[in-house]
Structure formats: C-alpha cells, structure tokens
Amino acid sequence: MTSLTHLQRLEAESIQIMREVVAETENPVMLYSVGKDSAVMLHLARKAFAPSPPPFPLLHVDTRWKFRAMYEFRDRMAEDVGMDLLVHINPEGIDKDINPFTHGSAIHTDVMKTEGLKQALDKYGFDAAFGGARRDEEKSRAKERIFSFRTTQHRWDPKNQRPELWKLYNTRKHKGESIRVFPISNWTELDIWQYIYLQNIPIVPLYYAAERPVVERDGALIMVDDERMPMEPGEVPMLRKVRFRTLGCYPLTGAIESEADTLPAIIQEMLLTKTSERQGRVIDHDSAASMEKKKQEGYF
Amino acid sequence: MTKDFSPDVLNERRLEAVRLRLDGHTVAEVAKRTGLSAPTISAAWKAFREGGWEAVPIRQRGRPKGEGTQLGTGEHQLLWQCLADQPPAPLAAWNTRALAKAVAQATDKAPSPRTIDHWLDDQGLKPTPLALEGVERKRSTAGRWVRQQVMPIVEQINKGGGSNWQGGVRVVTQTDTTSRRYQLYLHGKRGALFTRCLASPPNADDYLAMFERLAADGPAALIFHGAFFQASPEIRRWLEQNPQMQLMAVPADAL
Image (cartoon, rainbow over all chains, first blue to last red; front, top):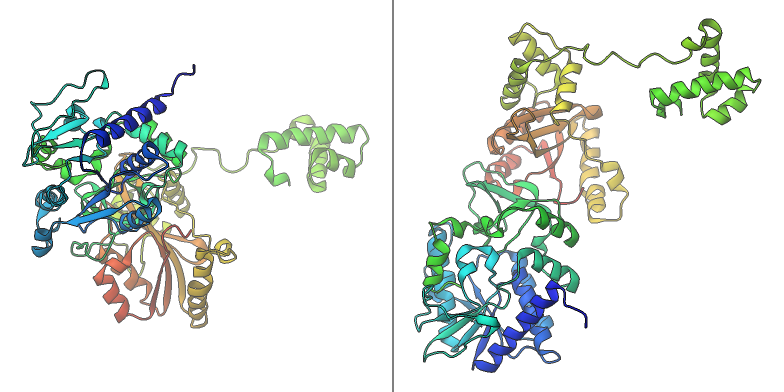
C-alpha cells in the first residue's frame, strides 16, 4: 500500500469535509471570493462530487471594489464550471455609496462584507457556508474550528467551540444556527500554491508578477485599478513589477514587489517568505485583534 | 578577437605564439593555433626579440585601481544631495559634468566627469537605455507600439530639428545607507545620462520641472518608462497646453 503525500492527505481531508456537509445540512453554499483559496476550494468541490457538478451554488459577496481582473475571472469561471453563481451586494451600501476612501476600511468592510454576507445567508436561507480561510493566515483563524457554529445573528463565540477529535465533526445545530465550514483550514499558503501548480488550477493573473501602476500609501503598494482611485495632489502612480499574495478590495489590498511571474517562481518565493499573506490587507491593521472582532460580528 | 581575451589569457597566447614562431611556424599557422591576429603575433615576436621573454606579456590595461580621484563620505553625501535637488538651468536633470562641477565648487576636490560616472555606476544609478531597435522588429504588441506610435513621432521631431529623449523612473537602493530612492533618468544623444534621485516617489511637479526644461528649446519627444501619467490631471493638463512636448509612455511589460 502506498502512503499518501501530504497534499493528497490534505485533499482527502477537504473532500471528506465537503461530503460531510452535503450529507448533514439542508442548504449549503460555497463562498467564492475569486482568490486562490476559493480556486482550490472550488477545484476540491468539483473533485468531491464528480462527475456531477457540486450540489450547491457559489456565493460572491461583492463590494463593488474588487479588482477588474477578479470580476472577469469570476464570470469566466462560473461559466466554465456550470454552477450557479449568486452575487450579493448590500443594497444599503449601494444607497449610501459606501466606499473605502470616504468611509474608511473598517466601515466599508463591515457594511459591504460582514453585513452583506449575513444578508445573503439570510436571504437564501443557507445553513452551511464553505469558506476558504486557512489557519496560517491569521491567529483568530488558527483557533477557529473547521465546523464553526454561528448564532441566529451569525455571531461567533470563540470560547464556545466544539471539539473535533480524530476528525469527527459534530454537525448537529440548533434551530436558526448556521455553520461556517473551512475545508482548507489545515492547508498552508505554500500547500495552496503547490496544489495549484500540480493540479493546474486557473487563478486570477494578479497573483503573477507584472508591471502595474501603484501608489505608496502608508507603506503599502496600492494598485490604481480604475479611475475611482483618488490621487493625492500631484501624485503620479509608478509602474512597478508587483504581484498580490492575497486579493480583496483593490484600495485595501497591498501588492508586493516581486519577479515571480510563474508558479514555480511563486513557490520558490513562498519557501523564503517570513511574513503572512495578510500583511497586505489594510483591514487587518485596523485595531488589535481586529480579525477576531470582525469574525465575532459575522465576518467570514 | 584579441580584444575578447582577458589579460591573463592574452599573455599566455602571446608567449605560446613566440614559442611557435621559434619552432619555425609561419604567422598564419600561429594565428590559426592561438587565435591571435597577425599584428598581435608580430608585436609579441618583436617584443621578444627586443626584450626577451619578459617583454612578451602586455602591460596592465588602463590606470591601476585606486589611482583615480577618491570620493570621500562628504562627497558621497553631497552627490546624493545634488541629485535630490533641481539641477542648474537649463539641465533637465544632472549629468556627470554638472555633478563634477558641483563637487568642485563645494569641496577642495575636483573630480572628473569620468569619476562621477564611475560613482554613478557603483551606486547602481546607470540604467541602460531602452532597446527600441530590437523591439521594433518584433511581431508583438510592443513591436507594433514602437512602429506605429513611437517611430512616426521620432521621425517628425528629427525633421523639425527637435530633440529625442528616452527616460524612466525606478526604485533604487542607496548602497551606503540601504535607503530606497526614486531615480528619474533621461538618456539623450548617444545615450548620455541625466538623472535625479528623490527620497519619495516623484510627484507631478518633479516631472513637470523636467519636461519644461526638455521642451524649452523647441519640440521634444520623450519615451518614458515607469510612470502612469494617465492618472495625473496636472501632467495631462500640461501636455495639452504644451504640444511641443510629445510624451510617449511605454506600456506596462512592453519592454
């Protein structure tokens, strides 16, 4: 009997989790943020239920501030995989024109992402939502269980989590409760890249290094993705060879200077890196333990 | 051919050439076996006949290392300070001559432009000009851009007696402090370098100060790499008001 590689073990674990959720819940959905983790999660879901398409839709909680390349990629992928793609934008956010520049990253994230997600889950009545969070991203994600239970108000209580001994998951939930499920929680960023390389999974081109127009804001390289990005007086963006380790709303996502324009080069870069990919996210610098606070309030 | 050999290899070949000549081989045969040219073989043979084996190896090329003008820490700081400031008019950016003059005026040293050139090289401040000739022939987006947008303007400027420039902006690391600098650079006739180095990303005023001086003497074309001018209303407005300046931004990843 041949033993599995560490990636095969992770893959098997993720597939088992997905099948368990479909068996135990009534109306699951997969949160699709268009990033690399979502790409891997989607690939795993297709494997888990092949030859049929996965028995749940994709849900993209849009903020209207994602990179243009992400929207193009999202629409192309939804067409290719043959799954339903639900896109939800918080209507209140549209009415008030909530944006990261005028309202700041904290309000923008709360209204457009946290509230938007809660609205979408309530609107469609989803009782389980797959998310592509990983433990190695951030400390509050590190301690969150794979099956993460949420109250009727979508709140997370980090002090009240269920044990997951020997990979046995207790999926029983009270009325009105829902579950956030993280099938790739045990993967690392390097695992994700190796898997993308080995399985030839399509990803948004922004992950590859290329010359892009960027401005420096508080030490972060912010890409000028469209004309909505307000320039400081006299500011002129520079074209620099950059790539993104993580993708979110473009005004809140920092690029890194890199020459890695192929998957092997990215993997090589990952082997040498000593920082988390989330260092590029402005929203993570809001306040101490901000991610845990956001998660308690319902952020994924 | 001889120019491609390192001094050590060249000396070995010269000694070998003399040995072969002593053995009675013709110059043509020696040339074939050593890879040296006939004049080099003759020169080695002549040196041997006049001075023996010791005279065959060539002398060290150029001035021995360390004999040139040495720039101290004070001059280094002064040069970085100059590069951060506006150059004297009418220069659009600093060249080696102006930097040498500035150092001579402020200190008791009088470095040559060549010394400054070496200093720029040591600091990694000598970007290579854009290789447009190679790109022009390519059947690619970049090749089409050069053929269809750049060359017609360059020819028009040449006909009108104007000046053609290349330039760019990039991030460099100051070697003695490891702090990052933003280098604005221009390449003029025969690749002559003009440059400035700023502590923060250049803003519209920095670019416009440079453009104004380039366009002061008549029509000028500038092929520029590394800035996204479309996002700057100040620069767009200035270009509309100054049609004698033709700015061609190199598309991302084109070169």
